[in-house]
Image (cartoon, rainbow, N blue to C red; front, side, top):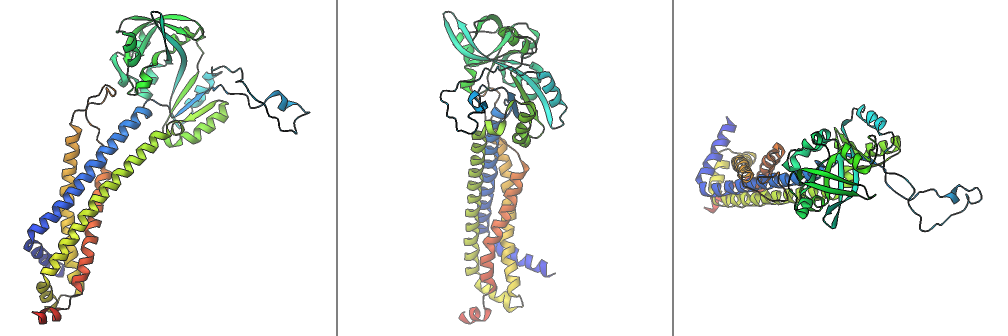
Length: 419
């Protein structure tokens, strides 16, 4: 019964100053709307930018890196094993890029239940022959079906059919930048020269565009069999093993484990692309900071309105306390007013925030650098709505708590005597 009475008094005070109440609710609504819209858009943008890297990058890459030998002949000599040996101009050791016994490595990885999939790869430096001009480039020999399954290869083939790379002998999917330089169309025959002088004519079956212009100017794709033929190697020749994990967070630890197990060089996606992860964290932090600032500003608006309401309703508060309402009851009345504004404004803000996000999601976003993106990216993560709703209640509670304490301490005798 007492709760109903407090709710009734709170409602009367709210409706008595309905214009100020409406302004406070609009402030909360606007803050929540912008909080949801901003966070959804920035998170969607992060997902888009990270996807450009994550979708095309293995969680772990196994390969042989050409490095100078850490152990020199003098270090093996018994006469100098107790000395510090300083050697200058050390040249890389005679180590081939090929991963030996790669079939056994792949079989071991496939049996690991932490691994989602394996995609072998050959990376070869080549020259694209355009008349008398040679353009430097890189050809990736891939297992077409595994590359598509693990790294969404077909989403980046903007012209032609990606599966033609497997079905057509001596075929190539050119990077969009390379194709524009060579003025090449689908169906044309181009000539490729390797760094060893081997030449091969390939048929263009598609164009690839990753969204990273520097990559698209040099990089192209063939099947593994075509790459082996181009390099004059056997059908067991592989230079890279790409590993996709079920949990990307395990990549740094597993990279070290696989490097020691297979005696190969290994690099994880976090190490290879740390700058992208840092950029995403900073953008998310900025979004939360701006959104929470908007909510705090709305909280100050509610605080000012309740302060003015208390000043104008001194008589009413004095009468309430004179008729038996305690200081705690008056405290509850004004906190109820603040929470009512916060809940009503917050619910409207969540609804309008979803509407704003949906509106942004329909705005066309066409750019040659990102052919697979048609509209502005939005992330409809429920977490954003939970954070916005909870924070709106917390903000309005504290905005009403201080004025309510002031109201609860009013002495009715002093107010009535003053009148």
